[in-house]
Length: 317
Figure 1 (cartoon, rainbow, N blue to C red):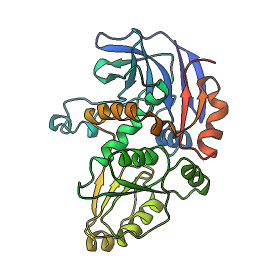
Figure 2 (tube, rainbow, N blue to C red):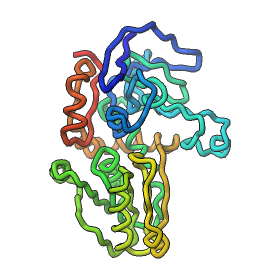
Figure 3 (tube, rainbow, N blue to C red):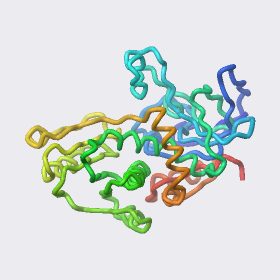
């Protein structure tokens, strides 16, 4: 079999020994893989990982039996203090393929059967690669107080746009704030509501998909100028240390929540949402690039050029 290893900001395709699936595993041949912010941060050295590593966690593919599937790429242990309480997303021993274990940029990957999900035949495998990040969006939106009807999203990448799409499907009003003017134009062309407004006369749910000091400062300015008891939901993991303004948080009784990955139900609902709203989700895919030439296109297409979602086509061309 072959794998594409990431090492020293480059990708190397190597033939390695075949890996037979264990009795509880399913062999999956990845067909499309989505690139996300985590992959970008690994590439830039902002998220340290043990190299060499095989990247790729937003995976759609085909089993040996020819079934269309997507992979739930976070394997929980089932016995830590969080797992025994049902908080599987915060498992203390979580294996996240493509991050702390080899991921999907390979000829095939053996996956525990509980983490392989069938998708309808009607769902194109390209869109299947959006199921995982859409589940991230669903999990964040599920944390919003039901009385709040307006969502403000910091960051117009794939997470931000997927949150906007899912929010609107669920009847919420959604606005994106994006500082990159090139990306802002792309978002407008694709029909997303983009705003530079920092004052809202409602309780809002502000979702920070970036989470560095710059984004958290913008978030607090917006929350200061919005109705009290608005919510700040953090999904981004750009920087570990951020500073919060005590007076803004306390005087406005801001409710702060973290949102990490998703539940099994979120994943199943994501499959349903993407399948039933294919046209809406398809518009965020900017480029589909071949795994064979990933060393040539990754920096240009993912890092240097503005994009919303780049997919990797795993079949050789």
